[in-house]
Image: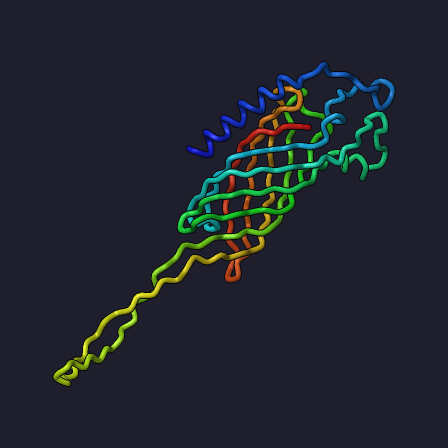
Length: 235
């Protein structure tokens, strides 16, 4: 519950900041005659800063894991919306945002795990549905680092010879138990997924994600289903 409480506090702070910075929305000229004017929100705020809580289930994380993470995404959309791209590649690039992310979880049987790397979002529609809903596809790739706890090794029988002062040899059997120190294992990982962003205020939105995490282990690939929810701030 601690990650949830932290997210609630963060949401309150972000909403207060958004309320102070909220300004009157202006409209830019339409890209062609007959089209509706575009709001200037996207051109003014091309960077998304996002925080989220996550829950994972699958063999990649033992059985289940919870954690918190964040993303910073830079939109490739042109700042000058009056200069709308006419080619297909330019229109598709306007729907893409790229950046970096980091996620910390506590899988079962591990001290902690970090998944960090590059992230990309693609908007499925040119403009938000009903002015608020944005369906997205996402893809992340990076390194998955697990910190394994210390473990006791198997008992090893040892024969001990004890020569007393009377020079009588006594033979006894004891067991030695070793301790393996904490270890760090690093693997490659990637996660395709889908998301839905709901805009609440100008520059403030909430976001839900569903992803399939694939960890490329040395022995065999592992995977887990990840569900995440958080807040997005556009700057």
